[in-house]
Length: 376
Image (cartoon, rainbow, N blue to C red):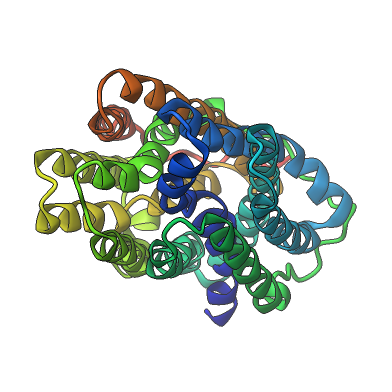
């Protein structure tokens, strides 16, 4: 379990710092650089495009370097990309930095997910999977407790994230081991079609979930939330993510078919919709608790279904394929939602999340437990 905990710093860095913390820095960057909401959304679209490229390259990187080395290099380069985001005000340069963080983050996510799946298989427990993905909560909590207090100093925020990611890389370095996974190991075949009732909800989740986190701070700022309130909201959401393994470890591996995935997506939809009811602090806190306690368990539930439905030699290729689909969805989501919000309000971004997650839930519950494909 100690290995899984240190490995979870991978998602803390690749997701908590490199993707989700941007939502905290967005208001200051938007004010300082004069961005529209569409431009603000384009930053996470660039991160999504990089993530898509990283997902496409991950199987090749793992084949060349091995799973453990891919994870370690991904962590190191993520720290560099985060710190580099502080170096310029140019829109194109910032897009490039966000894209680079997406590329490296995807490699960390896929390689770490494969290692966590192997740990889970050896221990016959879902805990290593949910712990790995819940590591994002630590990144959210650390970011939420520190970034809002910086005010307009968004460059300092990015440098701080880079330093935090570098520390995470060092601490997780020896946790990324695969007990005999040589660089030349084959990564197998991707098996997506037999799992389409899992893949499609995952894409809908990808299009919708990131929008809530990207625009949450802007949504609260438009409703005159104080810095202290924003700090509290993000810290509580991060802590809810950290607590999620205790709630969902058994469900993601034990509930039949797509029941766990459908339940998680339904709760996400409800949590996002709750924020539309009122901007009052108790309501927003209830929203982020529901959201935080479930959203990072969606990849865990999907990875568990991949593990159930494919032979071990196909895990890397299939997880990479699912991550590619996911990346394609989350690339389009923030930009489209930002365009809609420019013509309506930031509330439209929250509604976007609720509708797409509800649609994914309706599909996911129809999935049956897959039968593992025959060994190649």
